[in-house]
Length: 215
Image 1 (cartoon, rainbow, N blue to C red):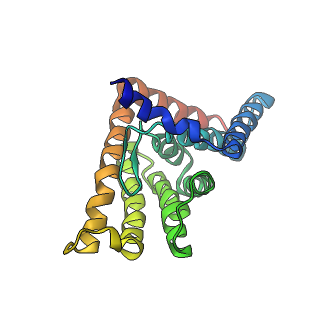
Image 2: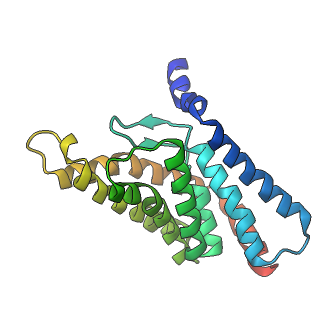
């Protein structure tokens, strides 16, 4: 048990100093903006909450419940802050936040074999989480479709650039689909479970109401 717990949190020790600096700066700027003005415009609030959600998702992404052998992890709902952000502020803001998050992941732990694979696995994959913002009346639906958007990007990258990892005789397309679903599926399920917890769901709806009705 102790060995498993160590493996879950060990990647936190691998955070690079500049990644910690970027995340800390996001937190500090967001907190400063939240406290500097009592009545913030909606665009200012979008920046404030965007910074907080990116920082929170990035931090949670380094708590890894399970690691896949060729990359990909199951985390404690690390995508949920970005889903919630997209749900509240809409798809455009959500895509921008997702792209920023993907670039931060790239800076921290790059794995690049081709420029197109870089785009698919980082800015495009995480930017696709912003699709959740298209479902303004249902966060669970947004989580599902935003997650499918990310899955599609990793899926395409997998069979185009990592076909050599497929076992002999296995179709690379099927291998990429199964491989990416193996970790993204549980990750999305965790996001859904947490989002549907009554206390969490109520807090999200209250936050959305305050932001939308009190710009």
